[in-house]
Length: 431
Image: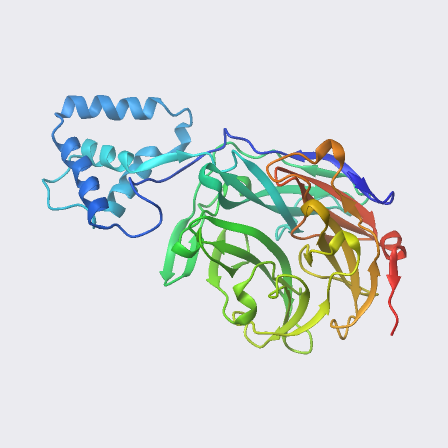
């Protein structure tokens, strides 16, 4: 990594692991669209073939399926049963399933999906809501990461780690067995999800559910939002249907239950929105880039509706001539709002910079980095998308900034920087 000397890159490499799989819905058609007549006919052909098997043959096939899995704690028979129940509305009238047939039918409409086989990147970081058992002076945190698997479908996964008062970072290895949440409630594209009690946070995968998300839940920018003594974790992310994008919002208090909601308004039709960690002047505030080139400050009285605001930052230096965007939510310092940015330069090279915004009027830029703080290194520039460094959110811990970031859209690492040294390289702007 080419970087300023005050950055301390820690020896953590979060790389994609194709052995980590989820068991998810499968159909002989394109997910997650509704079944059309051809899809329905094919599904019922599968049912007819299962029903035509005698009980001995059906049991033998089911036993073979179960033996193929080396994770007995998956509760596969329960998953098969749930999937068969989900498919009931698609099946035509048929004889009552035996328990073996019902399990086998469910299995035919599921598949293993290696959700992070291709990439694990674009991380953000927030304090963990549970700090029990943490050594005094240390902090437990949660990393969110964008995982990419077969078909370039993006989902959201997590890691847990700790930083000590001296700045030493540890990240727990993920549990191999991953799981999907239960859909507790759905009204249109507003969805409530819940993961099983006792599941490890690294097991939890939020996979596309709606048609608007069909090809990906991308680049979640988590922030710990404070309001009237309560902390709620929000994340803006990009929903990608395979044809169109829109900004959506995740809300959680505990990283076990989540609510997913689409955002509305003129500013929400693009990607890369980042929420301030508290209200400003009694209103929600967001950094957005709805013109595809520059950063804007947008206010709203409604957390879900965002319209046009005022431009605050445009491309100025050669490393950001193509466009600039944010690298996560602004971080509140005594000196102002610290906003990490990304710039796109020649050969679509991504670099990370920073600006300082006025604490009371964030539309006013106080100071700005003239040169990139982080750039792709020659030794690491090759990957899924070459020549890129990118972050979806950093956090303040004591006198340091902790910033996870991705390299070449392939894997992620983490770095720290002392705040006073960072502020030294931000050049004051006139006025």
